[in-house]
Image 1 (cartoon, rainbow, N blue to C red):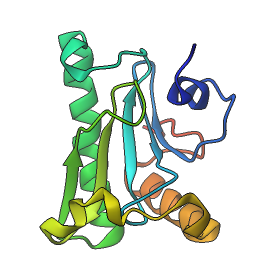
Image 2 (image 1 turned 30 degrees about the vertical axis):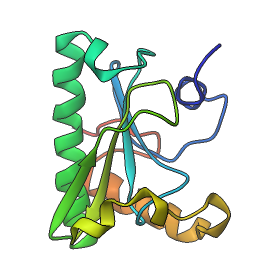
Image 3 (image 1 turned 180 degrees about the vertical axis):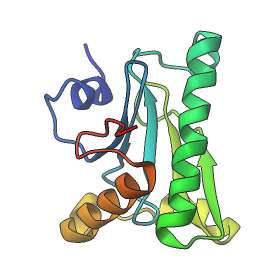
Length: 142
């Protein structure tokens, strides 16, 4: 059975993509710690990050760093948070989000999907795409 992330990547479920290439995608999470909270996910459905092929792991982190730089720029954030948890969805993913303090890393403070404002989610995706120079599907303009 495909993971929910594989279904998002395949277009079977909606996603607000901010980056996409053949190996890695990045899209907003539906339960963010802050607006702009992005998941960086390999296209290959691999449960544990420790099992990724080294080249995919490298690419995943390169994209996470780019997304982190975009988060800092787009949200005037002093830092970009980076977390690998991996218990919610059995598909490797890196959480990248705007942060200014350690308490921002507490997933118990995440917004429920029903509590997020769709307009603010769309605005966050637009800001990140502008900072990453990608189109509405997350593909690079360069």
